[in-house]
Length: 286
Ligand code: NAI
Image 1: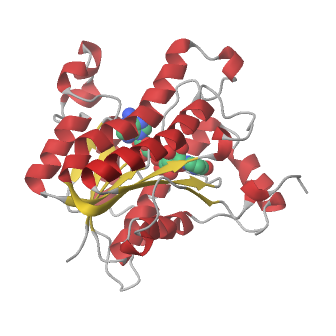
Image 2: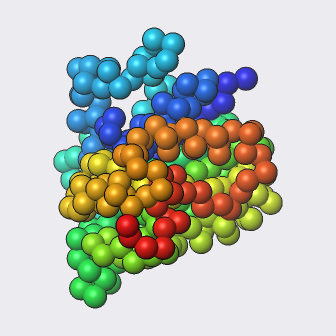
């Protein structure tokens, strides 16, 4: 039986979510997406116009397909949580059913049970500000979009998951080590995400018999990373200092995700796995 996957956090072909989708399809899974509401229109237009066709190519020559594409905003759990200004915002008003609980309901109705849940999203409105200058609002927004969103997804999608299923998210080593420039509470959000991965592994492991892991990825020039501003420097730093001196390819993260989400990793849960060319192991810049 082909596995069924839902991936939240794809809005172009540049990020980790896309690469995970690709690795999962190479392994025979059926993939549906949750796309951030304000990004959905441009994603669907680009997709229809063939802008992603080159990167949709699978090794068997076929193009990657998505079973369903849902609008989603992981900052809201139920429709009752949506403030008036968002509900009436013109980028949101044309869409419906995009809060986490509503997307889970739609997935259950359209797909039924799923095996794989991927959280590949983050947002920190004050990411460019040092923690010393971050407002309470900005800090909490980073935690809400980048950490609580995983908790919310496991709460709502856990009941739809087959036993033996697995959840994965993406984290960054700014949770453990000081990465000047990764501000706005994003380092705090990643620390929370990694801690929550352990607690969710226990709670959802007992309750739903599913596994929960996270991948701590090296730098990638995705859209989200470009918004932070110093990604080119990070890529260069990693190239110069990591044990393996090459640029990280998103598919390397996709492949490890496919492994962690597969029965090959049936004994692995609550784990933060580095896919960073080994940079995290260095104690001294070279
Ligand atoms: P990306 O831009 O491809 O993915 C981030 C996605 O999050 C976007 O599709 C965006 O539309 C979506 N998003 C933002 N707010 C949302 C919300 N409220 N609801 C639903 N979706 C929302 O960039 P990337 O880099 O692939 O990010 C994926 C994950 O990888 C993130 O958790 C990021 O922190 C993590 N990561 C990225 C690294 C990098 O160097 N690019 C390094 C380590 C981790």
